[in-house]
Image (tube, rainbow, N blue to C red; front, side, top):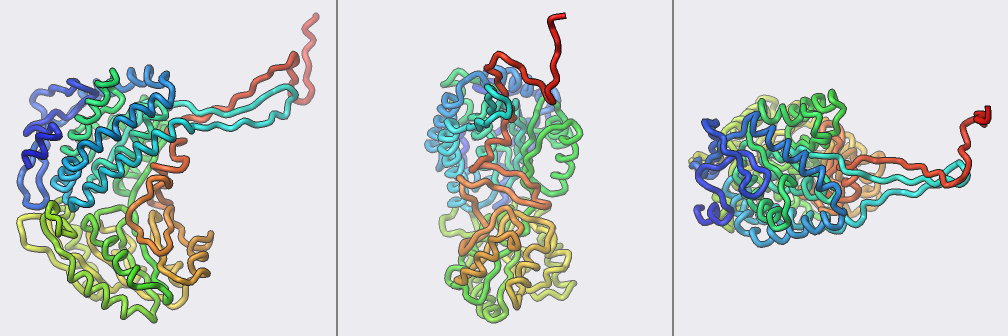
Length: 508
């Protein structure tokens, strides 16, 4: 552990605010935030939490840096992001290990998350030369119209524990090539990974004579978080977290007419029809449900299977779950690590209790593993889709299994939840596949065929509908959310035609 922390510059006690190289805050008498290893409950390191004064210093420097950074040509801003990608490549193993250590996802997933950061850096570099506007024909003679996109200002990024570094990169790198600065408030459950990333940022900024492009503020939601979402100087807030908090963030930002990107809950389902290849479907279901211990927003929560293959699928899933090795996420043979904290265990146990109370059938799992860490058994339960517990998202490895008769019935069940993030169908029937992808099919922001719900392609816009929030991050044209649109009309004639032929006699 010590070698990982030392390589990433994480100390036993760390400052909670930073805007660049040697610009860490030096708060005295600050409350301490202790980061615990969810595998064994042991202390990893601690952070001096930032307060109101720290926030003001960070925001002021971020605003000042924006005034200069927006003048830099976009491809040059892209070069800064390219260097960030290279710096992350050099620290991939250590940072991936720290993600596993502090968050609890297995090492392979921790490394994969850092790879996502590298990939979005590569994507953003290319995007920096493609911040396109449109040229349009004017209705007026000898006039020209076009649109262009301008930077917004400091962007606030509030990230969640389950992807403690990748989600920041999705936002920060795209925001940077658009000419914005970023202020990052990470989850209080995973502050050390954020400090490690900030250290990497600091070196890259120093090498390019920048500061305040990437800034960090670690503090309580009631103080730092509220100041960030309420601040009129922060035109965009990108929030990843619960639907409950998303509503609060959205209302607060809307009150000041700011912009929001919201990535909230997911209650993701797979439809398995009677033509599906189960050898493809089963691994996708298992990894989608138990990966990251069911703590992804894209985790597979529900499986809706055709009645003709239901029993066969059920037996295969139970068999596969028996092969899931639970333990230390830094062990290469581990498939599922711990939940993030004791509160998550309580939510898991409450969900199991409700399932049993409603008459659900627990096929496997359903209990806490009595070890020092936050371990639970991955669970499969036969349920009814309309039950409240199935309609809600439990951030834990609980998979709900249901059956259907017709594809329309399956889609009705699929769409009958408040969330709309990711979805999937396994089928060899082209009609069912196309129906699933049609405007009468999945109502989610992501709809896949013969691939699971979990994971995201860097090049595609990531996000969902309904209570998932409606925001989009990463690829496609998501960059437009980090900029303001401006329409321009240029009159290059000697006349000024007015509407409805109105004229003024200026000779009198």
